Length: 214
View 1 (tube, rainbow, N blue to C red):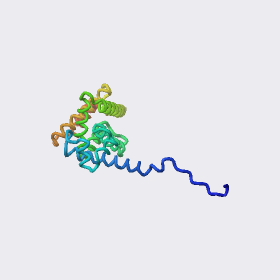
View 2 (view 1 turned 30 degrees about the vertical axis):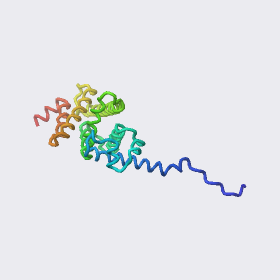
View 3 (view 1 turned 135 degrees about the vertical axis):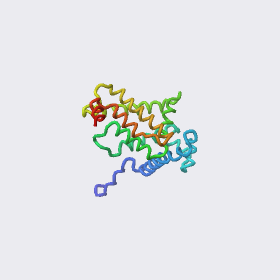
View 4 (view 1 turned 90 degrees about the vertical axis):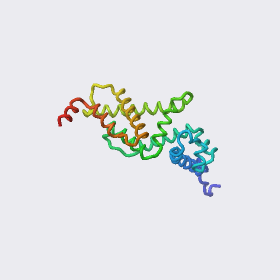
C-alpha cells in the first residue's frame, strides 16, 4: 500500500466550475443586451418574455437568473454603476467632474438614462419596495460621495464655507437628474453648461467677484 502513488486530491467544486462559469457568462450577456431591447421597445414593452425573444434566451432561463423584470432592470443599472466606478478618473475630481463623468458614461449607452428615470418613477409607485430600497440606498451613497467632494472643495477654497453640505449635495443630484431628463427629451439641452453654472453658484463670493472683474 505504501509504494502506491497517492491519488490527487479532488478540488472542491471543480466539477461545477464549467457550468457555473457558463452561467455567469450567460447572465452577463443578458445584462449587456437588455438596454438595446429597452431602447427599441420602451419600459412597458420590455417584458422578460420580449427580452428573451429578442436575445434568444428562454423565459425560464431569464427567471432563473433574475426572477422578475424589476430585478433584471436593477441588475442592469448596478452593472453600469460598477463600470462607471471602475473606470479611471482624476484624483482631484470635483463634484461637477463626478456628475459630468456619470452623464457622459450614460450617454454612451443608449437607453441607460431612460431606464434609470423609468425605474426611479417605478420605485415611487405603491408595492415596488425592492426598487424603492435600491434607489434610496443609491441616492444616499451618491450624496455621501458628493458631500466628501464638497468638503474637499471647501478645503481647497473652491466651495463656499457658509452652506450646509448635505443640502448642497441633494441640490447637485437634483440638478443632475433634472438636466438629464431635459437632455432625454431634447438633445439640445446643455447638461455640461448647467452643471458648470451650479459649480459657480457654489463658489465663494470672492471667487465670483474675481471672475466678474477679470
